[in-house]
Image (cartoon, rainbow, N blue to C red; front, side, top):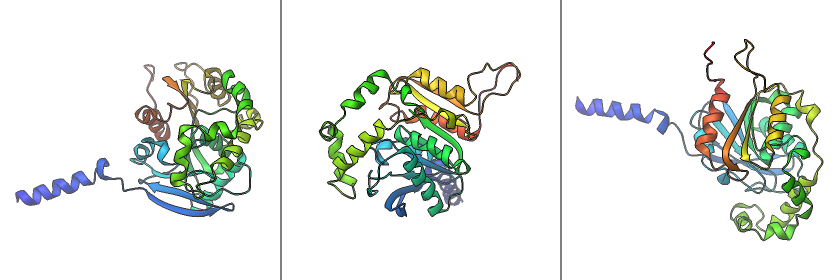
Length: 288
């Protein structure tokens, strides 16, 4: 009797959240002329995760397994990043967005929530603009909709960027560990520098968005706080609550003492604001 009870208890525990995740499953699919690598983990509604420039799935860190506790996460690696091949095509935000849309078609995802960080957030914003039927909710961390939204120091730095400068940075050595073409890093850097110099003025498009957006910014991010607030206002946010009107569907979260590169490393804090947004949960006011 005791053994049967113990066995039942073990099975019950294994069915709980701590044991509900399986190991991420990697796969590849042909997308717009490239072989795109992606990983699937967790169960639930689909959530697409998009990394930043010079990154890959592992460098997104602990936020992916946290999100996979309650979602079926599809983590992608962009053109020339990680294990995805590069192609003879510029890297632009519209191109990245179209790649995500094509990926969704290939694997049979009609509509999904999307979480993007940095370059991935820009791609997510363009996905919602160019393919609105595919985006349920968008989480955009460290994103700008206009080049004027970057910090003045970063805008001044962009014209000084060179391939040699980036190739000499410590993280450059990690590229070879996963890359389909271990010698392809300089070509990727050239494309990403060109991306930084591309004109960006999406205000009119952002104002047409129907999908709710959670904007996340560090208080010392590459995006100015004023720009994050301006984006929030474009999406209908920023009005006073407690006055009888419903809150905006979009939300704004500012992470304290957080630079741009520190945003993605705060998995617990990110998860604490992302999960309620995706579930549609919010704090109740005293007048409700």
